Length: 459
Image 1 (cartoon, rainbow, N blue to C red):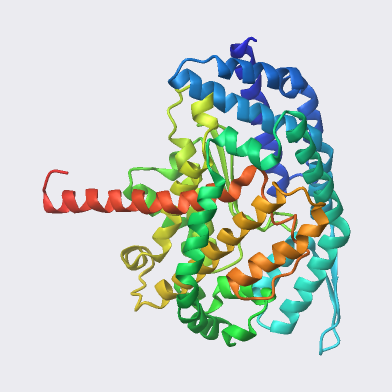
Image 2 (tube, rainbow, N blue to C red):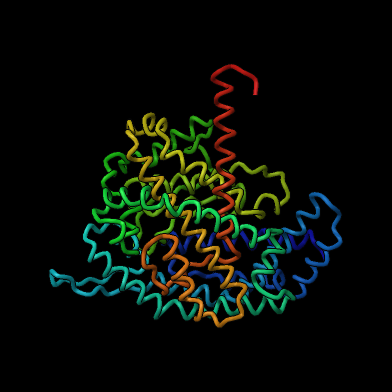
């Protein structure tokens, strides 16, 4: 197999796919035109190509060459699965962008029609709990009717291809590809859930009461976007300082963001823009897109700094490195940089320096509560995904398990309708969980370095 030619074509493919992803989910293009991209690079992801990559990796010498070839195997298999589901993925994106949800009239008699993607932003900004519930009910109904059948088909195809490639399950395939023991990780997350059970009410309850105005036992899934949004803190996080605070923070690190020709910052509002912030590394490190859908308040700051962490991580990769080391690899690493940056938004020193906010603990308490909900949610998601991708049961039968795992972890009645749309491919849930752990070590190291610098002592 000509690995050099494969690498060259693979780099072109990821650049084209990354640009299509950016343009569609940034709301700049109605079409998610990935099928022609797969067609132009069809030879990358054939069964013969995958088998050739696996054979090349099996005979690779220890060291960097082995790591490069293993990264190519994962890339080839992900592409093999992506090629099988490309039409479904394109149709899902099209439906999400075009779909509108019709809200039932409320007590005031009024109804409304809003875009599916836009509805998440509207819900987070809605002060009335019953209106939030109507938005969520309409979105879940639309998900169930229009999106779940496609998600079901895509997951079933991915599972079938994993078995055709010789693995007993999708779970077993990614455990081998990533060299990770997902069962061991689950034992750790199960222990975390048990260790935080007693503290949950005391950490989360007061913040729900303060931000949403209800008791924890009355909290509904539809209230969570409002809880995370924390609009009462908007005055502390003005929109006018959003980009400036990021630029100034980067400048303190020696990074001149306005002069970075390789990073495009997109914070414009568009109706079809994805409600989920993202970074699209089209060509690493030459062409990086940082996309944030403005919602308001601290959410925008955290999203910008999180995705900014990704963007700066990719932007400063050594261009002389092989493509596999620039663009592929364990996503826990880039997520750890993203968390490192977004945690700045809760740091008292940063709040004082950049926003003139002297936090008496209110911001920190809310973020602590928010993070505990997130962590427990992802622990539950891991347990569920291990069932989803390793269980022989028909997929629709796993919807109740999804709802049970999430309900127990987050202490709300979690809907089953998102049992497939809430799943990222390739066990990305494990990348998030490991990134949260890695970030604590990065932060501790940086603080130790700062202490050495300020004290004049040698590290």
